[in-house]
Length: 363
Image (cartoon, rainbow, N blue to C red):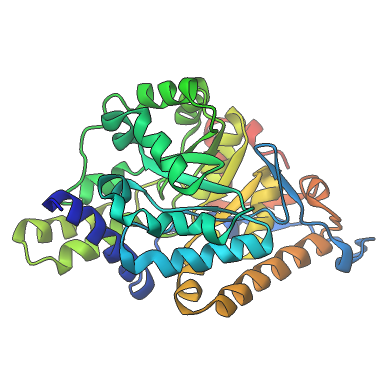
């Protein structure tokens, strides 16, 4: 295996370890600035609340989505297996981490293909970087889809991370055209996915214009890849890499908060997955009430998935309990009712949303 391929694979294990062991969350996604109007007379039965969600013509038992985390190193296979089994048990969707490593080195493909083995009926999303799509073309996207027999493919945008990685791709020219070509040439739905910096209304309009089927906003306020790469640079024995530690620290505050990004993208179209700092069922309820179709979570599942199936089930169960309680206390028997509930948007989040277009505040 060439040095570049080894770097890609080892980087996947570095990311998993750092996210599990280090403090890599940064910022405020904005969910704390959203407050539901309590319904003191909810007139619904908490025991029969319906969490069923629809996304890209598929029905899910819950709007919770297991966001892309890992794959591409032998040490990541069991984590993906557990996540996939949970997706199958709970009837929810799941995305895999970037498949670049397995496309470069097919011997690593089973760290991804295991998800379909463990989740034969789940909605699975393949994952390829925009730069890799541009450089290798539709063939790589089709191979990524085939690898896990995916129902959709996410093309991820991670240019802050690339700017800080010592081995990062620093040329973003031609990526939008490559996305447009992919949307025109393949039947598999294409989802654009940010990885922690959010998506603006202007970028969303470019993506819809290119023909994408959905957008996963990946807003600022959760896992910071600037922080992750700063840790990697600090751990490196290479002096040049260590200089990148400061660059990572400087850009930890870079990005569009998740709630603000969600408002911007929803103003331009849909469907939308809200992700980035979603940490509870209450956060999910708020994202759905704002208009998201699904809400994605990754970091909260990492440690449980590294522990056991039972630990992961408990974590998902608690999230569903929180979501159900929030729906009950707003008198929402289903997600359609939840989207009609009143809420207040306060403080900095409201100021940021109203700055360009006050009409985006719907309540």
